[in-house]
Image 1 (cartoon, rainbow, N blue to C red):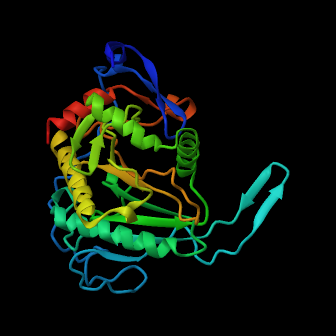
Image 2: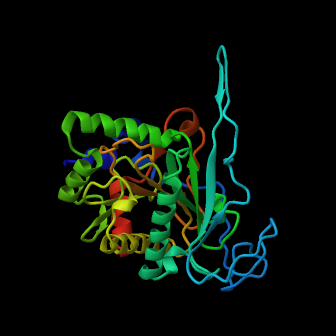
Length: 340
């Protein structure tokens, strides 16, 4: 791709998965910064914190005592956003519409070690997290009331994480959330027209170009998407079309864990800090449909822009117009690749 213009001039890039555009302004990358600087925590966390409600053997806010777990621990969220037994109802009064939404929310502790993040865990231990995701996806997906299972992690206080213990969440619900619904529509349309995976065909183009590839192993690609919104946004995707993480073999699960390990370590090296981000897995709904059009993938949305203390704010034009970024996806990918 002849992309000199893409590196020098303002332009828009199209997200094939959502059907939305992002404004790219590479000429602004060196603008001076006099705005807010985030505080960097230099506190060294203990391996076990008596005040942490996620640490093994500690008492949670609801009075339950955590078991003396040795690897991954999963429990039902004590402050769930979705209620399992929410009654079925709807409101349809002219332009006012509402409907009930039920679901099950869980917390997954990645490790009993309070001081570790995924970047500091061994690949085999991350693989245990992957297996736990698979187990929860299976059990929640088998519930007839659940049509989608969202796995995600918020890391770092700047991302609103309420507890530094290494953990993620799983929200399962009766309908598709907005972002997933967009991706479902666009993947289904492409599959019906081409009989191939939208994301799979995109990956083939990226693997040929190599411009935005950060890392790859036998089964997975780690790249900065062409349409990335966040400064150092990353996608991990299987090379072959798979609808969900249940289709991973044991060897593929290990290679997936390696991909997670590689990118989280690179993140921490980038600005010499424990890199904050929100990550999540988008995969096929559990609604009983065929869903052959789906190609599951994991995304990382980190806010840091130019240092450990300067983050990207999604405000102003981003709130009222469309997403905007300065540093190009190609430059971001290259910077991360150099750290691997």
